[in-house]
Amino acid sequence: MLNKTIQAVRDGQKFLVLAHEAPDGDALGSTLALVNALREMGKQATAFNADGVPEKLKFLPGSDQVVSRIDSSEFFDTVFVLDAGELRRVRLDVRPICTTLVNVDHHPFSEDFGDIYYVDTEASATAAMLYRVLKGLNYSFSTAVALCIYTAIISDTGSFRYSSANSEAFAVAGEMVAAGVDPWLVAGELYESQEVERLQLLGLALTTLKVFAGGQCATMYVTEQMFAEVGAIAELADSFVNYPRSINGVEVAMFLRQTSTTSFKLSMRSKGTVDVGALARELGGGGHHNAAGAEMIGTIDEVLQTTIERIEPLLTVAV
Ligand code: 5GP
Ligand code: MN
View 1 (cartoon, rainbow, N blue to C red):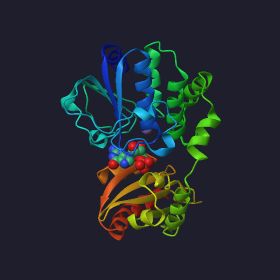
View 2 (cartoon, protein in one colour):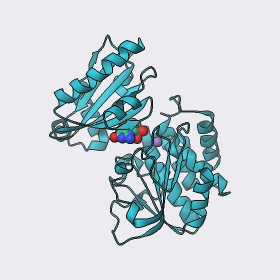
View 3 (cartoon, helix red, strand yellow):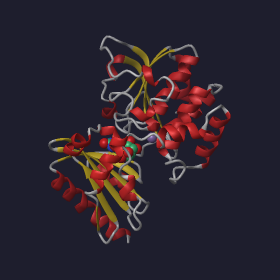
View 4 (tube, helix red, strand yellow):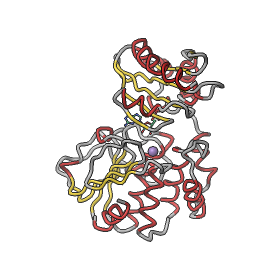
């Protein structure tokens, strides 16, 4: 499928590139890596994200040209859906507006949509797969494209801390540094440029922190009221789940972000023994063994109860 994906880049002239909503560094880094590379090859390429670009990813080249609307009369010969897991997560009906649909993804059980289905669950990031595609085209990496790929790999490997940080992740990142990426610049943008509202929101969220199941599971949440109280937007709660995960003895961490009066976005993290991806799929969502998510309906108490009830037996087995 790598070869078919390479061929799709060769054959196409007018591309649309998009990734999942609420984009993280891999979703947007992958989108912009491909769009910038396509443009350098003299092709026409549009970057789309339903939620636009989060503040902390605005340093990525081309992020100012990411659109959140596509006219239904537009037509593309090739559409690349990246890092999506499920097609619905791009929030755009892409089928009617293209000839060839390509799914490039590293999520386990990535939905089998697309004329070309290039999925590799061993890849550290979707961007590492795009690196292979671009290599296959004998593309010579510009600093702009290298910056997008490097940022995507840093994001999805937790700065090379997760077990997804395989030798390819290090090798590709090294090559991107050789192509001109400054690691401190990326770290500065990702980790040393927080909005004060994010820390204020974190303060409120930490008051909800609970540890149970003999210390193996920790939960934390933010409500719409907390967002309003500090004047924060949804993206500022990104990676809050890392705080409950960081507790000594915690195997599974859960973070809930309220999305409407009766719905929450669930983020789960595992330190390895529990497959939270499998649990997320049972809950109608998806993700990886150690990082997964789902949409949950109910009040905070109901949603917490549902998820805790499902996690507890898994922890008992894991012990
Ligand atoms: P996060 O908790 O950072 O939002 O997501 C963790 C991982 O699970 C990411 O790889 C993300 O793409 C995936 N994920 C989160 N929510 C969903 C969902 O509703 N469906 C699917 N298929 N994957 C999800
Ligand atoms: Mn990813």
